[in-house]
Structures are given as C-alpha cells and as structure tokens.
Image (cartoon, rainbow, N blue to C red; front, side, top):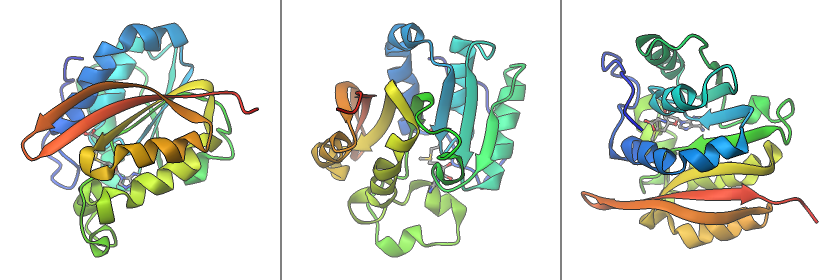
Amino acid sequence: METPLYSTHNQSVYEPSEDSFLFLDALEKDLKLIKNVKPTICLEIGVGSGIITTALSKHLGSSNSYFIGTDINPQAGLACYETFRLNQLANSPQIVLTDLIESLSYRLRSNVDLIVFNPPYVPTEDSEIESDDLLTKSWAGGINGRRVIDRFCSSVSQVLATNGLLYLLLSKENQPDEVIEILKEYNINLDEIVIERKCRNEHLLILRFKKKASS
Ligand SMILES: C[S@@+](CC[C@H](N)C(=O)[O-])C[C@H]1O[C@@H](n2cnc3c(N)ncnc32)[C@H](O)[C@@H]1O
C-alpha cells in the first residue's frame, strides 16, 4: 500500500521504518483477501504514527469498517489523528491508551475481525522494556524480543472473532516457530507467511493467522 502522508515532527513517537513499510506491503498483497472478509471491526495494537491504520482505512473505507487503535504512548494517539487529518480521511479511528488490549478485552470479546500488530520486537535486556522512555518501549522487546509479543499472544484470542484475521510482524530472532505454536494453543492458526524481507541486520516476516472455531 502507498505510504500515507505522516508528520515527522513528533520525536517521541516511533517513526515509520522498514518494519512499518513491510507491513504496508503485506497488507497490499492481501488486500483482496481482507476485503473478502468484510471486516467490520479492525484493531491495530501500537498505532504509533498511525500509517498502517490510515492505509487500511483508506482501502477498506471508514464507512464500512470501524477502526480502533491502542498505544501506551499518548503522543502516538495524537500522531495517529494527525495522520488521518493529513490524508483527508473523514472518520478518525478510536484511539485508546491501554496496555495491548487490556481495557478493551471485555467489550470487544470475540468481535474483532481484523487485528494488526507491529510489536516491539528487537531483542534487548529485559530492563530496557521497563524504561520510562516511551520511544525505547516502542522497539525494545526484552529477551529474544518476546516479552511484549508473548503477552499479546496470551490475550489476543479474547477479542479475535472466529474466522478473524491476525497480521503479526516478527523477526527471525523472535523464534517465529515458537510464537506459531503458542498462538495455536489459543485456536489461532498460521495461514501463511505473507512476506519476508532482510532489512539490514534483521530478517522480518509478516504472518497471517486465522482463528478457528473452538471445538
Ligand atoms: C514498532 S512500533 C510500531 C508503530 C506503528 N504501528 C508502525 O508500524 O510504524 C510499536 C508501537 O507499539 C507501542 N507499544 C509498545 N508497547 C505497547 C503495549 N504494551 N501496548 C500498546 N502499545 C504498545 C509503541 O508505543 C509503538 O507505538
């Protein structure tokens, strides 16, 4: 998908990088499939600048789909609204400041048709994710880059609808096979590795998962 216009003024928000652009490429590749699902409720965890949610909204139409974004960084919420405004989209997403989906999980229970997450995935010391610096928290993933990803995996099934789609970015260092196995325990199965790319010293993948009905 074409990168939406975004402002680079806000230095405390994650600036779109190779991972963000890879995400847009993956969604473009899957656009037909996503449109066929006719997602009514779309959720992006960790919206940052908002370029992913904005691009999705542009392609899906904000009158057909309702967009919700979360982040722990209040500045990200503002940046996302600004990105929507710059791209002249009428209906802004609903931004909720919360840890992952914590404050939404009860209300959104099994109702979200499409979830996208470009998480903090870079392997670091665990102490880095406890940092007070919100910019550090946007990329620092702790041991194996998995601290936030693993918490996400154990909560996402609460809100993902049956047959709902999940797009998750991982790096090879996150040990994707393990993440796939963890999500499987929650009835969320790997559909396809939509795209993968070596970006400098990282090997990034975007995986598409689907939630199957519980047996
Ligand atoms: C790698 S950045 C991605 C930003 C944007 N989605 C993009 O692709 O450019 C990760 C984002 O997740 C947010 N984040 C980090 N930990 C989070 C958490 N526990 N709950 C919600 N958002 C979180 C960060 O503030 C940051 O905006």
